[in-house]
Image 1 (cartoon, helix red, strand yellow):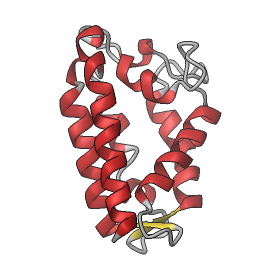
Image 2: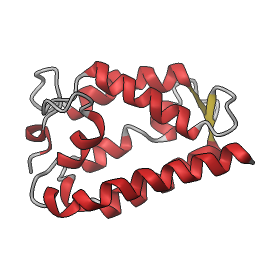
Image 3: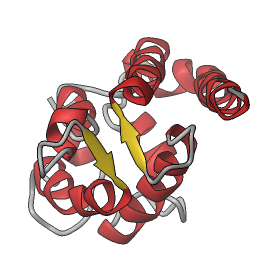
Image 4: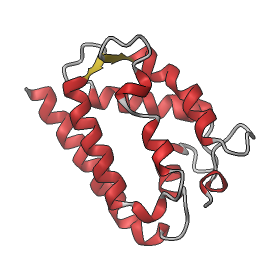
Length: 147
């Protein structure tokens, strides 16, 4: 239960830390995505950055530390993502649904066993990058979120 509490606190902190940026990101589709995924803050999220951040996200939501995000843990993950989207709606733009879809249990459970291993989750970054990188230049920028 201690691990679940740690996960909930981390999820709430993630959502709360992004809230002050909402006004700044209004009208700038993809700004919030880059705030979270562009680890070197150069305006571009690379595949390597997506994989690194997905590893961090995986550790946050694998609350029982068994190497999987199962359906029960995904409930908290989905809730944290929904709260983040709600708090930062102005910074996402038209492709926000695709960004969110790339994190779902259904999208990442490649062996269809009802849970997502770390390998599945990290491996999902490749398809997710393809889904997000609209101009196929190998990086995700705010231009990829344009309306």
